[in-house]
Length: 291
Ligand SMILES: Cc1ncc(COP(=O)(O)O)c(C=O)c1O
Image (cartoon, rainbow, N blue to C red):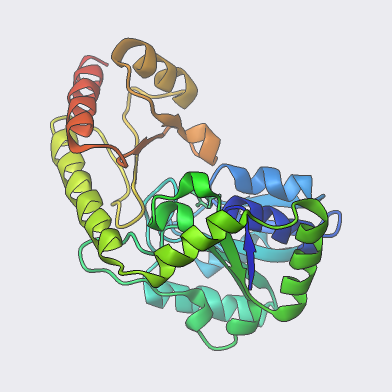
């Protein structure tokens, strides 16, 4: 295990130690915006994988993009931006495909504690043959609302952990000891605050879906986890342009789908107070009714 300055730092370190120039990393679409850039910074080649049947990739989608240079797959479930969660049986299929092709998987578990409607988290590392090929990336920033403290971690095979530790030692000399103490207190302490946050997110997600139902043509994958709604509307052709107009006209900040490799979508974060969200929904409904 190696503790780093946020899971973003963990991911960056991993790509630096894993990739040789030209190595390919499979990145399911939509993806967290930093993955492709980090892969490129390490000399690798990001390979976006479209999900044939919706927002979750299947082994056939991955197989279609696999080459002799494929080194790893990035899995992020619950997903930023879609809120999608891979059910255990789909993870089993992907796990089997990884073993058959002798590939690594980077499991970005940043939102592992934010699953709704009684769902429970399944790690891909729990399937046969996977512990030795799963690189688990964890974060304090989402689970404990400790974004600014910058603590993330890597769990995985020892040779990779050693390489990450050497790289980190020569670059940042490791995260601040104060932040490490704070994260330890969060991990060791009672987890009730996390459960309360999960309840609050579920309540806000439900309110959001109810509010947006006023515009029948708004569509989105069901947000089973994380704290985002990734939606589209027939009036959106260019997500950057629409996000800009919504910001200018309604003062609601959304992230364009293009940042996540998927058009024509917009990502809304519901990690905001209930009243703020309620007002944002009212303004979005106004905007899309007139669109
Ligand atoms: C999927 C995912 N991974 C990693 C991160 C990075 O989080 P941090 O560096 O704060 O741990 C984020 C932040 O938005 C994220 O959404």
